[in-house]
Length: 224
Ligand code: SAH
Image (cartoon, rainbow, N blue to C red; front, top):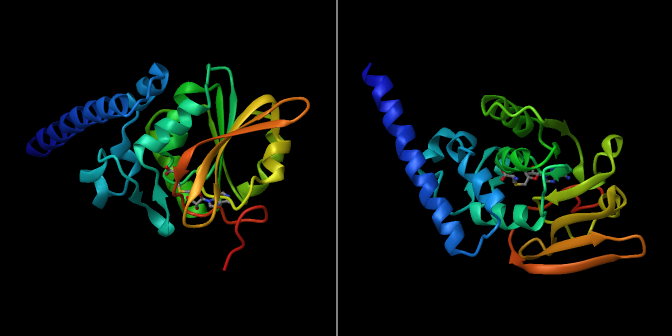
């Protein structure tokens, strides 16, 4: 009984913290109400490791297994907003990590395909996504710098790890008029690029600088 009250009290506290986080995202300039709603209905505390739960709603990246990170909530909001999702899109995500960004996308898209290079992370993310009762997601373990050819093309692609240059495979798997959001630059600092594929060319603009863990793969950084 005591334990139950404690757990209920804890989750109430998280609801409050989640509302405060949404307020801070609005203050920071996030305007897309669907993105704010999706983040308001995604329990970030369920996607961080037990030791990090108290920090689940701090607007910062946190360590997860395999030396990787769960992205800062503001970065999740900026990248998701840049995808301009209407609900009908099939989205490819590279870098499942904790599964938090995957969950946010699943609220906003028709279907999410997410690739992670570490099996351990993909496995834990799968458990959390089932717990969150999301069923429009497929996970795959492999080198996401090469995309996920079997399910291509995708109306949207989001890469949550830093690439030295835009992987040609991802551009090739992007549908016409599709959008690709990807951090590109050195391992220390990147530009967050938004790339639109049109019939003749690709148009690129930058949303500013950012810092992500490296995209390690054939069309990313080489392991070493
Ligand atoms: N969206 C995740 C971000 C995790 S960090 C979250 O918020 O939790 C980036 C992830 O990209 C890491 O889990 C890392 O293992 C993964 N990654 C790096 N290179 C990759 C590759 N070539 N293919 C798939 N995943 C990759």
